[in-house]
Length: 59
Image 1 (cartoon, rainbow, N blue to C red):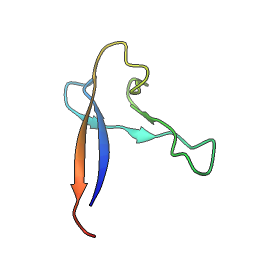
Image 2 (cartoon, helix red, strand yellow; image 1 turned 45 degrees about the horizontal axis):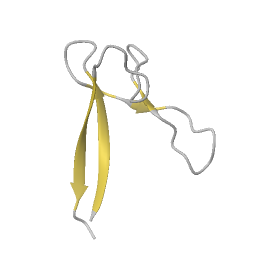
Image 3 (cartoon, rainbow, N blue to C red; image 1 turned 120 degrees about the vertical axis):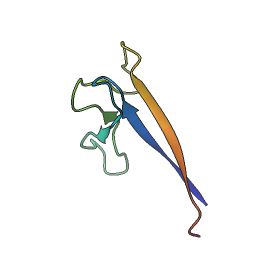
Image 4 (spheres, helix red, strand yellow; image 1 turned 45 degrees about the vertical axis):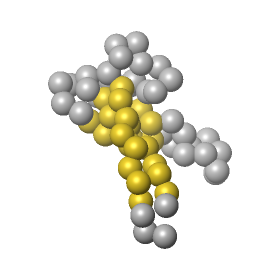
């Protein structure tokens, strides 16, 4: 079973899925960023970021 996290931003009034920045290293995906307001999990001054963990049972 795999668990992965989907990040959302509610800056527009409805949840928008965050997209990942271009990674600076090959092994890292970078940090997810809101395309509308630029917020990320580590920089969220308006407290609009949330997440949902999704389980993948295809083992």
